[in-house]
Image 1 (tube, rainbow, N blue to C red):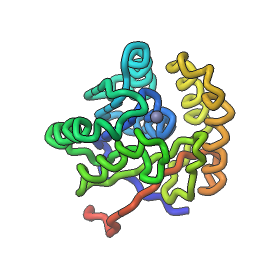
Image 2: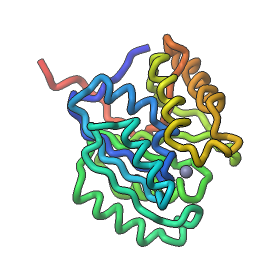
Image 3: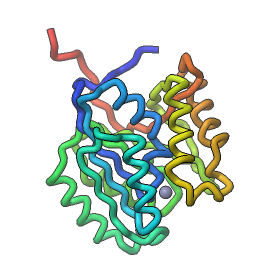
Image 4: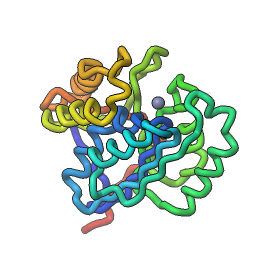
Length: 219
Ligand SMILES: [Zn+2]
């Protein structure tokens, strides 16, 4: 299958997640893939609900998944489960974000996500970054909202393994949840790997609502 790549080797990647582990679950393998191959890439990382112990875990997640390539980290403390009530306040954070970063790639929750907090972040991403490449990531959950994504990032098996190991290492407070398991994380990557014929068998998948396509400007 033909592969499209980012047009720059030093992109700024904006990662947006409602809760402290969302970015890592939704696109942690993709971050390991991109950052490992593009040492000049920089990440602007924003988690909107990371309080107390969850803030410590969020910081650990940034260290494990972005390391020194994290140029900026914003950890907000909006109340878990109540983002729709705080919509205006969260929108203000997005307006500030719009002034502080002009990303080459935005990674955010997908618009079809049924978690109310995830949906708010997705909606505000799409409202705020209107001239940008946005890839919307997926998270398997009780609500049963997985669909048919249209963009894939093939992962080598080492990056797939590292994603799972780092998730379990960074988010100790979540490991008692019945879904926060290695087999869950591996299973979704395996299904997406089949769909895009990844040579390792593993991939992460995204939704791109819009892509502008054309010939390269280089000669
Ligand atoms: Zn979440």
